[in-house]
Length: 277
Image (cartoon, rainbow, N blue to C red):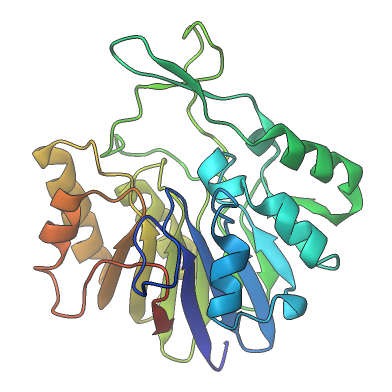
C-alpha cells in the first residue's frame, strides 16, 4: 500500500492560475510514495510551461502512462521523452493506430497520435511496455489495460473511425485507466473513459477488491452525452462509492454540474489543482 499519494493536474481545458496555459488535453502528475508518474501528456502545448510553473520535478519521472492514443493525450509525449530519458512508457499497441473523427456534417479530422511522437517511440522501443491486460506497474499502482464493455458507453462514441472514409468504426480498444491503492483508499485516474464510466468503475472495482474508494479524477467523456447517459454515469459513480469526484477535460458542463450534487468536495478540475489521494 502506497503511504502517501498526490495528483497534480498539469494540462487541462481549464487553468486555475492566470500564469498557467489551458488547452484541449489532459496530463496529470502523480507522486505515489517514491514513484513519479505522468498520466497522459496533453497536446504538448502547455506541458513544459505548466510543469515548470508548478514546480514539477520532471527529472524524477519514472513512468509515463498513456490512457489512449488520441493527440490530446499523447501529443506531449515526445517532449517528455526527451526531458526524461529514463522514464518507461506504458501503453496499448493500438495507441499507435491512425484515427479519425467524422462529424455528422461530414467534417473529417485526424485525431491520432502525432507522427513525430510515433517516430520517437519507434526509435526508443526499449522504453515501451505494452499493456494488454491489467498490469501492476509499481507496487499498488495499476494500469487496467483494455476495459471489458459490459454496459453501453454513456458518452457519444459514434464519430470515431480508423479510416478517413468512415467505414471502420474505432472502438478505442486501447482505452485504459489507472488506480492507486494508498493508505487513504483507492483512487482512480481517468483519461477519456471511452470504455464507459460504468464499465471502467466496474472493472476497477473487481481488480482493486474491497477497500475505501477515495476519489476519481480525469476525463469522463460526457460532453456530448444525453441526459440519460449522464444519469447512468452518476449512478455508476454513486455505486462505486468514491468520496470525491474531480471531472476534467472532456467531461462536459452538464456532467460537472450534476456530479457536484454528489458531494460538496466534488468540483471541476483544472491545471494547477493538487490533490491528496
